[in-house]
Amino acid sequence: MSRPAKHSLTLLGHRTSVSLEPAFWDAFRDLAARDGIALNVLAARIDKERGTRMGLACAIRLYVLQRLQDELAARPLAASQNEG
Image 1 (spheres, rainbow, N blue to C red):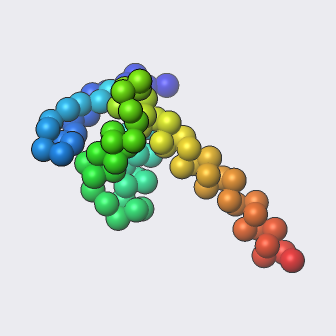
Image 2 (image 1 turned 120 degrees about the vertical axis):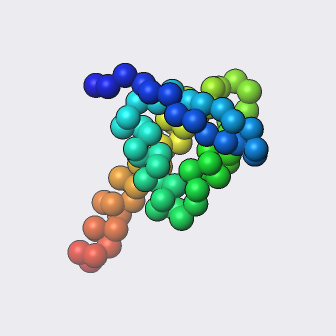
Image 3 (image 1 turned 180 degrees about the vertical axis):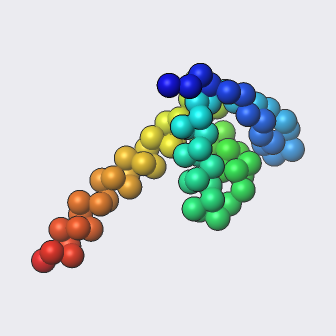
């Protein structure tokens, strides 16, 4: 496992940084690319929805985890529909 690394982001014109493990940062970048949006745009959306009780890095990790879990959950459903 690699240690978290600091990454710079711009949220609504304001510079900030988050410390994320390489696996989470890579998945976060991949999800933004798949959605066809800039990384800063996705970060701003997550930031807006996270509220004040959670840090941005944690919110990004949870977003990545939820998206990947949703994709995994959809796979068996799609496979079983193709068999029938």
